[in-house]
Amino acid sequence: MTAMSESRSELLAWLNELLQINYIKVEQCGTGAAYCQILDSIYLDIPMTRVKMNAKHEYEFIANFKVMQNVFKSKRVEKPIPIEKLVKCKMQDNLEFLQWMKRFWDTNYPGHPYDPVARRRGQATDAPTTLAPVASSRAANTPGVPGSRSGGKTPIGGHRTGSASAVNHEQVLGLQAQLKEMSAHLEGLEKERDFYFAKLRDIEILVQQQCEDLAKEGREDITLGEIQKILYSTEDGFEVPESGAAAAEEEETF
Image 1 (cartoon, helix red, strand yellow):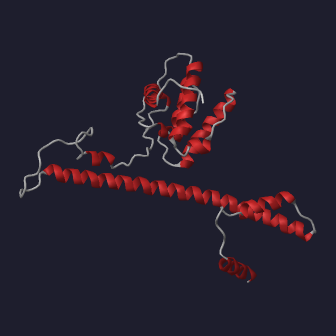
Image 2 (cartoon, rainbow, N blue to C red):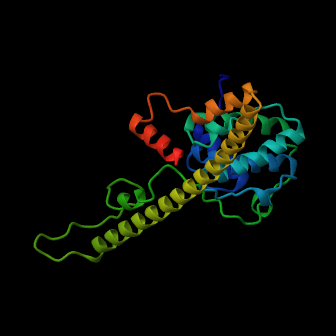
């Protein structure tokens, strides 16, 4: 890999200044939103209304990258976008891609004024991070941590001051916010799962019908057979229990 002079902190500083956002981790670029707006700062014609700046679910990340793919195609940018890796929000994958984006920007940015907030029409940019939302609440009682509370100890045998209850209240609010975010994320994953499962089920039915029609004519299609193998393949190390398979066959006979 080509050596880069920019560190992670330098890249984030450049990104935050260019787009007027407040990313704290390179992994946040995995939503695809920042990458899209970097391109917009160059070309000024990216459909930013289709870019979800505060995307929180993987299917939203993928939609952002689809916008980016269309831009690369229209601008004839010969650079593969490893969407499957980037949307996992891993540091190394996004660091390498952000480094490439920085080089691309350095080469192609024409130097015109750019108003990132106006271009995204004031969309919120609170991309998710891998940090727990309650981290700031824990830090409230940790000496030496920015934002921590300072004050004397609670007198032995005396009553607690209001600061302790305030910290507990903040922790509860933080946990509630974390639970809400996790519930929303789970709901999004379930919708995404059901969406793709329905597609696979439609394909399975179509292939099965075609195979049955061909079988009646005494013919077979190698491609359809391979598709069925893929559809019915199992993960390595996993086998369908014989009892379960037998039960399924019995159900199908009725």
